[in-house]
Image 1 (spheres, helix red, strand yellow):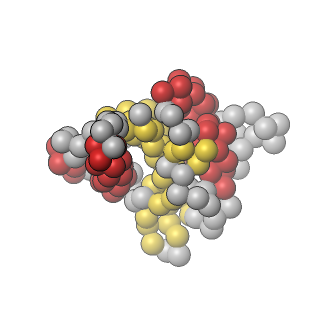
Image 2 (image 1 turned 45 degrees about the horizontal axis):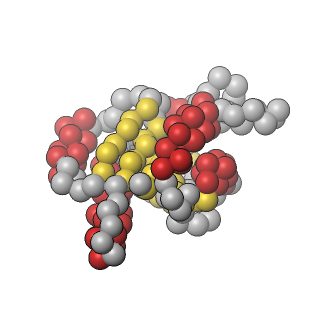
Image 3 (image 1 turned 120 degrees about the vertical axis):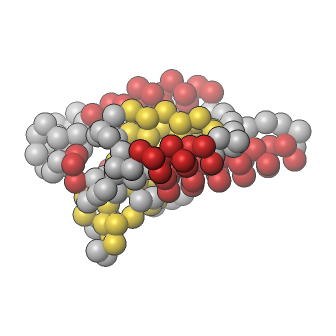
Length: 166
């Protein structure tokens, strides 16, 4: 089993410096809402992921004035363990992003589906199987539900399940 995590960095999440927002970084070190969700959900799924390596993607932020709908969080393509996911998430705020919008899932879905298919193909070559779960953490409604539904139909033949929390 493989797990990937995609995190919403759109402006509608609110200023991460302000208490009560989903990305709020509390000076006391307590987990924010996104970190709590990662810990709870991936903490359970991690028991079934043999390598404990997780791609962590973000979406909905601007880099250099350009909105990116799928970008790597952290310094490595994959994070090790649940704490590695949290660390990659936190590093993203130091990367020069500007929280923006709109909330678009299609690129994250395509990226995860491609990775899921590649993992399955590699596993088959060794006489094994592979399956991927993508956890999308968001603050609310997707901007283009029709495009999201269409992408879900397109990737429906890949070994991928999508869990959306938000």
